[in-house]
Amino acid sequence: MRHLPFVTVLVWLFWCGAPLAQPAVPASAPASAPATPPAGPGGDEAVVSLLNRPIAVFRAPFFGIAPAERARRTQRMLTELLDRGGPGQVTVQQDPLGSVLLIDGTFAMVLTEQDVDAVRRETLPGITAAAERSLAQVISETRESRDRGRLLRAVAWSALATLAFGLAAWIVWRLRGRVAARAARLLATRAAGVRVAGAPLVALPRLRAVTHWAFGVVSWLLLALFSYQWLVFVLTQFPVTRAWGERLGHFLVGVAAQLGHGMLRAVPDLIVAALIFLIAKLIVDALGPIFDRVAQGGSATRWLDRDTVGPTRRIVAVAIWLFAGVMAYPYLPGSDSDAFKGVSVLVGVMITLGGSSLIGQGASGLILMYSRTLRVGEYVRISDQEGTVTELGAFTTKIRTGLGEEVTVPNAVVLGTTTKNYSRAVKGRGWVLDTTVTIGYDTPWRQVQSLLLAAASRTDGILADPEPRVFQTALSDFYVEYRLVTQAVPELPRPRAEVLSVLHAHVLDVFAEAGVQIMSPHYLGDPADAKVPPPAR
Image (cartoon, one colour):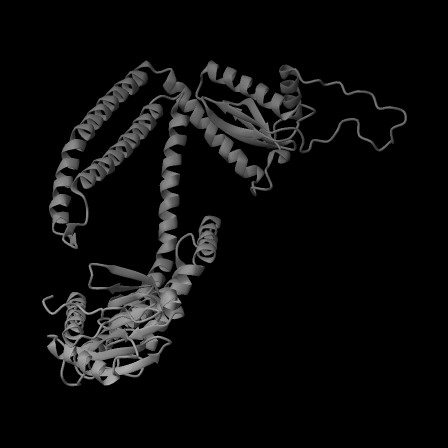
């Protein structure tokens, strides 16, 4: 028999309780209107399942029966057919209504063209073959569920799996502390030799805590994986829960396959990104010998010398790596994702809002470096701070005064104020040392010059060649301003301060010995006695 008789379907519908009588056609209805609505998509989808395993999906009414009612009646019929027993042979016959599935020659269910999901590109033969396979599997699992021997074996295997799971969990829990402690000791031994400015880079208690935390996370992940596998294995041992176990197993395998596929798909892009960064590293390494040669005093140019070679090396390296990062950005995994784009926008906004001052200081530092306004080791005066330049950084300049102070001046302040450099115009070693005194007009200027030169000659550390000089720098209302300019040898900040202090002491002694008073108040009248220290003092 090639086609299932149409009468059989009607008998099945009658047995299932489907209404056979159709309502009368109203008189006003057109003559061409059919008495029975044609079968077509409508209602909600309904799944036919047995033993938690889906068999077919009904998506359209059949002879006025909604998909949900079709599924309920089909499931009841399948249950009764399986309760009868028998060989359980599933066959398919084609009928003008659709594909009819039979169990041992008895009608089981029917699938129509309206049950096909066109969006998923399904076909009626395809969903029929899938339903046939699912029915055969359900029949086999039904027999297995009624076999006491198989159920006992399933219980035994589940018990063994539970024991193995408990043993594995116990081993992981016992080894976690020992492995973490051993790894912490090994890392502590390696980290003890890494020091910055004489201090260990990583605190050992903190390292131990982080190591124990990391191994704790790994152990919990292992326990979660063991629990998942144990649950999948136990569920697949019993026919009633086997479908659940298979879904759990397929989910884990699907996630792993998706991750593996993503990693494999990202490998070519990662190779391109790695090649870009490798080329950047080769360029940086190739420029290294050039900068080293300049730093050692050779091959200096107008824009690159020993003072600017360090910042230039860093600027060039940063520029090369930034360019490489921009070139490799499209090849990084997830670079086209919304999260990656959001982080990039956030970083850009943060730099825009909070980096203006930072960028200004950095630009000022570059101007100071490449204009050679200051050099490390020079003795300068910036605003009201005077001392030796100890560090010329990208954002700040550090000055040591020699009086136990280290002054940090922002580069923008250095660039925006007047700077006096006492070391730049000196030929040979040393630096310029000067001091100022104001003496009244009643003292001959030649005598004041000779006294200042005598004080300079008595001071150790002041060079005789070039010889000190005295300048009259101002003729004020009540006094003359004299400036003694010398060249001193000490280069460190503290000896410089000591030389200046000794020079001032000798100036006081020489003027006292000559009977010349160092006093320049507003002129009101000559005092009764000369303001000169007694010879005994």
